[in-house]
Amino acid sequence: MSMQMTTRTTVLLIICVVLGTYYPVIFSPFNSVDDPGVYTYLLNVNSFGIREMFSTAGSVHYYRPVYWLSYWADKYIWGLEESFMHLENMVFHLLNVLLVFAVAHRVFLLKNFRSHWPPLIAALIFALHPLNTEAVNWIVGRTDLLAALFLLFSTWLLLREKCHWGVVLLAATSLFVACLAKETAIFYLPAAVLLPFFLPAQTPSRPSIRYFLLSHWPLFIFFPVMGIGYFVFRHLMFVRGDAGVSHVVSRLTGGQGFGLFESAHLILKAAGFYLKKLFIPFPLNFGIIHVSDLYIPVGVFAVLLVFFCLKRRTLTTYFFFSAATIGSSALLVPLLEATWTPLAERYMYIPSAFFVVGVVLLTTPWAVRLPRPHILVLSIGVLLCGFAYATETRTLLWQSNLALFQDTLNKSPYFTPAKIHLALAMQEQGLDISGKDGLVSLRGAHPLGSSPSVLMDQATALFQQGKIHAARGLLQRALKNPGRYEQQILKHFLSQYDQLIMRLDSGQELILPETVPLLIRLYELSDDPFYLYRLGQAYLFLNDKEHAQEAFGRAAAQTVPTAYYYKAALKLSKELGRGTENKKGSR
Image (cartoon, rainbow, N blue to C red):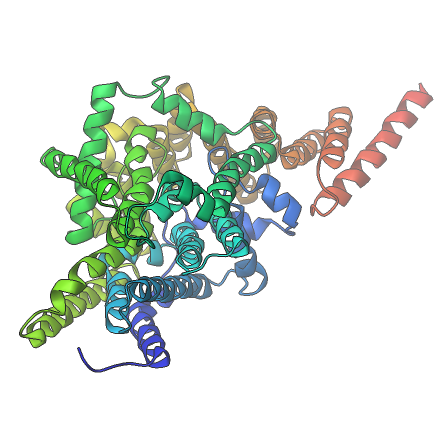
């Protein structure tokens, strides 16, 4: 590898590779999992205020205002055009690949190795790694892309040879922003704080703890303060309390979770599975619900590897340690039971960036001593070509929900939600869904079939078929033991009522009374004044002007003036108030 490349040539090559591999993504539709929900929400929000976004961007479990800020651009710049939303994901991935190159280049400079080739190889492996296709192709996977962007930028800043306190403060701020894109970015905090202990020693003997504290005091102050500040800031933004943190604490401390042995069993199995995926990503699967116990020994090896990295403490082991700390967040997901699947390839998007840098750092000293370097060049070329083919093939698969969910069911045949989404995709294509892949086969296929999330998906599919009573029956069944899904189930009920009202020329007076308790409960759960406004509309249609005036008045008092319904609520409250007073005066 004696041939040298300029930085400009290297960057242009990276851009061409990423765009050339991922360009089919701009022709992909919305994925039926979560994407339509995000689109509908954005479509119905008439205005975004920065303060409102940061105080209400989190759902009951997630707080990701930076993630939602990116959707602001989608709405007001691209007009929620799905091609541009996919393009934005691809651009974020490209920026992350360039940052991987920049981070690797800076590390090799610290090791007095000035060639562009090892950093380029690290960047290309990350760019083309098939494990990352899910995060790039799925619009809601943007949360991983954004968090990676700010985490890698923070790492790049920290790897400066002389780190001024202002640079450290900027790096800590970047980590804070990463946490506002995805909560799991906070798991990088231990690695960031321990970085000085992994850097090459400036003195012949091993420095003392006092030396580290004095020479790297900004890092030991700013990053812990940032971590505490993140949780304080997050807590202040939740009016009704931080349900996300409460849920995690409750599950991990045994309040609602598994026993200690079962938790360790799940964590080790997941750790082994993800370690294998970093090396061998195949088969790629959008619906991973089960892995073999044979991964437990691999998980034990992964844990021992972390302790080895802490003991060895070199720049190479630092990147493996960082991948492990960030990736450890994915090990908790099976315990929390709060996502589409307990295991997912997108969870390894950020860890893979650090992992590939560590692998290249580990293998480069050995590679430069090879007597026949052309064999190494050929091997790397074959690996990259294989990854590029797999990644582009997977990206083409994401262009069709029908093909994607067929592939998912081939690999996870008992995954009931995937069957439901396959049925929806078949219905969109005008295909018969009464066969073996349709709704008939959804009942009792898997224990997940009785979970509230699955029942909601089934109800949606049945409602679209016109089976209204069956859909309502499933939602009522889900409400018997809703857990954390109560608000979502009620929203499904409300959505179905809204669609019925729009379809009917008459008979709304029979449906609207049923929406009143739904709206009251949704307001109790969310504190969202929009439901008060909807409640006022229902009361007004039912000619209950007194309750309508009260609901409109509370909605106007509790919402922000920029809300699209504020003026209407205020006006209706005043008009109905005057009408009530006149009525009382006439008596």
